[in-house]
Image 1 (cartoon, rainbow, N blue to C red):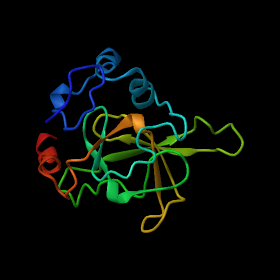
Image 2 (cartoon, rainbow, N blue to C red):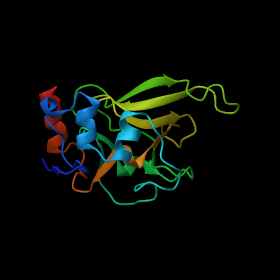
Image 3 (cartoon, rainbow, N blue to C red):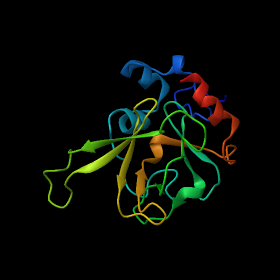
Length: 174
């Protein structure tokens, strides 16, 4: 497992359950101000401003908070929205990890604004980090567009193969 002890951890490995922060004070020590605002307080970065919106680097995108593998570069596509977009998260059952890696929640925060309505928020199932939203306007085979904040994820270019050891070991710690 690799992760820095500085304020910008750039998690490139799954941290043990026992090391996942439980309080906002602990999260603030681990994350940058932008990462905290977006991942822990459900913020949104500006379109076309995030680190990963236009990257083509192969690898696995992990939760910035806990290192859980969430998306693969093979499922990333250019949606034109200005945020990294994926048509599917990592298939937990196929990867032999426990449960789904993404949780979905009803988001009514923009419901009163004409043209927005109710959205579906997506979070990391393991630590609850806000990742972004999922929409029904994506490409085949799912028809979904997971619109994800770059500040909520980190790219691990070393984790390119399906079913990496780190992902298989993930089920053992849950």
